[in-house]
Length: 408
Image (cartoon, rainbow, N blue to C red):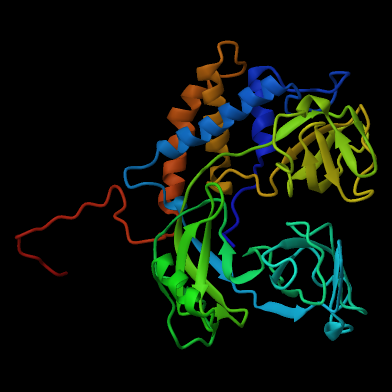
C-alpha cells in the first residue's frame, strides 16, 4: 500500500473548474451547492481540463524533479487458504473440512480460485461465507462452471492478490518504476535477503515446481492496462511485509455524472450512459448520490450494463434512486497524485488550464496566480520535503578553495 496522498478529491477539482467554466450544476432550482456538470459533453470537457492541468503541474517541476514523486511502497504477503470442495453449486462451494473454523463472512470480498478439477483456472469474488458449514457464496465462477467434489480451491484474504495466487500482488495505480532494492520491513525477523530479478527467472522456476516458503526473488511485470504487479518466489507462507522505493506516475483521474432515469433496490439507470462503456466497466467504482432522492448516500458498484446504462449494487445499499437522483461514479481511489501539501497548486493549475482553453472562463487571472504564486510556493514546499533519495538540491554550491583556512 502506498503512502496517503490527498484531501482534495477529483469531484472537488471537477466542481471548482466547472465553476470557472460556468457549467457547474446547481440543482433544478439553481439554489443547491455547486456540483459537477451533469451534461455528458460538458463533463467530458471539464474532466479533460482537470487531467491536463495536473499534467502541466507535473511538467513544471524543479530542476532536479519533484521529490514528492519518490515514495515508499509496502506490500503485505497474504498466505492462501486451500482445500477441496465437498459440495458445489452454480453460486456456491462448500468445504466441510473447515466448517466451524472461521466466522461468518470471514472471506467476504476476497477472490476464490479453482486450482484443479472442475472449474480449473476460474475465479469468483466471495459475496458471503457461512462459517458453520464452510460454504462460500459467489455470483458465478468466471467461466460459468459449477464446482463439484473434484474442485480444489485457493483463497487469500487480500484484495491486492491477483487471481487468488499469493505469489502475485497488484501494485497501486500510481506505480511507475522501482527506484531501490527490495527488503523485508524492520522487525520482520527475516535473516535472508530478497532481491529483484527478471520476471522470466521466476516464470522458469515456477514452470518446474511452485515452491512455498520465504520469498527470495521478486519481479515487476505488467498487469492489465497501465497497471503493474509484483510476483515473488517461493510463494509466501507468512504475512511478511516487503518495502521498496518507487516513482509515482500519473495516468488520469476518471468519473461520470448524470441524472438517473430510473432505479430499483439494486440498480440506478441512466439511459444517457447507454453504450458509452463496456459491460462491467464500472465494477468496483463508488456510486455517490449528489442531490435528489438518496442525496449523500454512496455504495460500491457490483456491475454495470452497457446496453441500458444500468449501474448495479447490493440490495438496499442506498435509497431506491428515481428521476431526481443526481449521481457521480468514480474509482475508489480518485485523488490527485501529489499529496495534500500541493492541493492549492493543483487547483490553481486546473483553473489556469480552464482559462487558457476556454474563452469565456470566469474568475480572477488564474494563469498569473499559478505561475507567479502557486507554482513557486510548490517548489519551496517540495524542497523542504524529506529526501526520498540522494539528490543534489537546487541552490547548494559545491566549491573548492586553495586559500589558507584559519580556525577561530
